[in-house]
Image 1 (cartoon, rainbow, N blue to C red):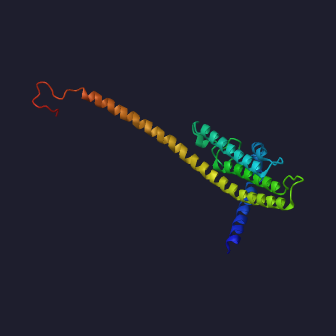
Image 2: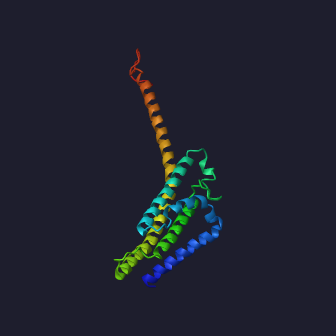
Length: 217
């Protein structure tokens, strides 16, 4: 299979996987996040802005989304038995405060799919024209913009996937880091206790009065 056909095949498979996720999760997959996700989506909606503006707004929005989830996660792990909290699990509904990797990925996927829709809307429009615009220049600008949009759709997908991987790894590593800190604190306390015992022992004389031997047997 030639490289071009292979790329198209992979893109088709990925699109089918996304469709399958949406179908499997059912009607609730999007509705779960409707209130909060729509607020994020408004941040990069097509308001007649340029492609560069829409792209910048989207990446800022996605960054805010992940930052919010990290903040919620950090607050959650400070609570007792947080692993049993519904907000930590993915076997229930994905609420606004749920920080499970599954629910966070569903929210990120909703944002990405909305972004693709917005980019396609931008792509379908001609740039703003003035009386001095030449036909050749217009076609060249549109062609360049459309190529950037196609590349951005692929790049944004990769960035989203990598961000989800980092988030999932962070969720695993940070609690272990906290446990490690607890162990270090315990070892330091033990070290101090040993030092105190040694200082008490050092108070005993090296030799005992009227003893025939300088050592204690």
